[in-house]
Length: 332
Ligand code: GLY
Image 1 (cartoon, rainbow, N blue to C red):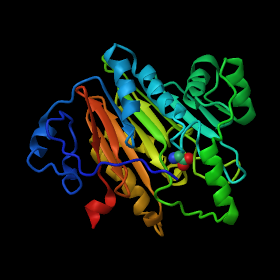
Image 2 (image 1 turned 90 degrees about the vertical axis):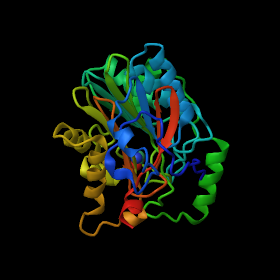
Image 3 (image 1 turned 45 degrees about the horizontal axis):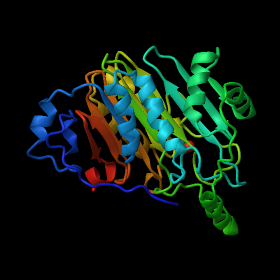
Image 4 (image 1 turned 45 degrees about the vertical axis):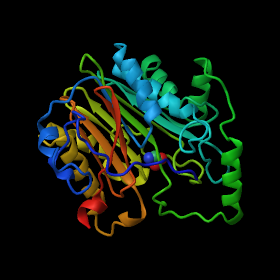
């Protein structure tokens, strides 16, 4: 599958982003570190998992026009969902073992409301269906055929999400059907996005086609509130990418927000959530990837992952930047 292009060791100089002090081994910040730690982040801002600069630029455009954080994260995620070249989100996502493209997504607003869709088929914009679930139903989660039926009643277009490229990749895989329950660390890039608007309100969203060649019916962390995403407008927000099973087991995004509530910076909280995974007895963390990003109410940003090719795209102060930090670099 295609991998996103990553930029290593981006300098934080002049960013105006406040990052926790423990990133030194991962990002070349030595001369700037004191300054970035002291500098006050400016609002609005948007951050996203992976190097999705077009998506963060789109969200930034919404924010600078005075739009809400909720609109910004939805618009940003929609851009990636429509990008057929991305094979882990929306249209063009890699299918399950039986050739079905099934999407998971969720969204959460500043009032603490949330909506999600699970195992959604034939609809590109899962994040927007999740928003409709939040706004137009008494429920928080719709799954499968029910979610699709709901989307159609809301005017979403029915589409074949299996593109020629993804079909080809699946057919090639199907020749051996060799499925590794231990995820390949290159095999995931759920789009998770957090934004703070000009009013200081926080919202978040995430969207994915899930683990490639997963078992039919498998659901990951992305539609599970508290695992794939959590926002508390008084405290901050967190969003996850990577092997959903591990994120669900540690309720990672909720954990990060609670750690921030108890005084940790977003960076410290992300690092603690990754440690909960890698320090589990018999953890086989060397064989899978998990990454988190977080923001707090002050606009401070944190990002941490198990392996080094997780990157964070931050659009703040009118500039799109890529940042990396990971457990392996820090501990080897
Ligand atoms: N993080 C997305 C998934 O595991 O499905």
